[in-house]
Length: 234
Image: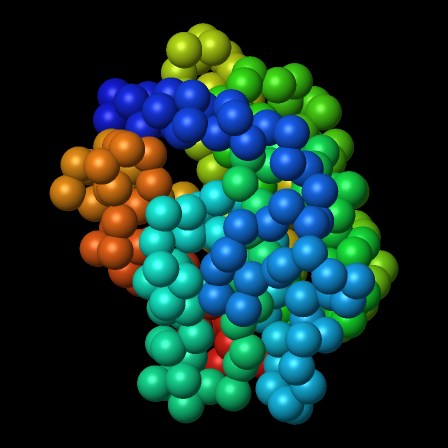
């Protein structure tokens, strides 16, 4: 792994430590159409007839430190609108969340079944050196719950990375976990969304942790390369 990734991921680990207890739906940070503490699921906020693309993720999806309009879910919404695709992007990012936390809240998020679901989780597991087998089991359980709640939904799993300080074997097992789970569970694998952003000072906020406006735009571009053809095929 590029040493720049180690730098940024270690910074994220420190920055997210204070958020580690926030594995509940009511503590979600803001994104485009992001979840807030309320009894209804985020996909139930409006009913305008458009298919919903639900983005379940961490502070990266929440757009921490950014105006909600500059977070990548909002940028994806503008890309979909510009492309003439009638899709409603719903960001459901929660800072500091592990895969176990995502598993705990996924049923609530799926109360109104979406048509597309992107799962961006696991990075905080890797940052903390959590057991890969446990993370793999959580990812599988999340994808299976999505398929059970929304049988017709297209499910995507974002590739994440771990820092190399836990050793080459851990880093390799962590990296290989995502394509393996995606293949076994029938999900579309999304390449690492921070490609070209992680560890690049000009792409990150002053904390060196989260993408700035320019970095967020590149994250949206990275994701759009996978999402656009998926949206168009369906």
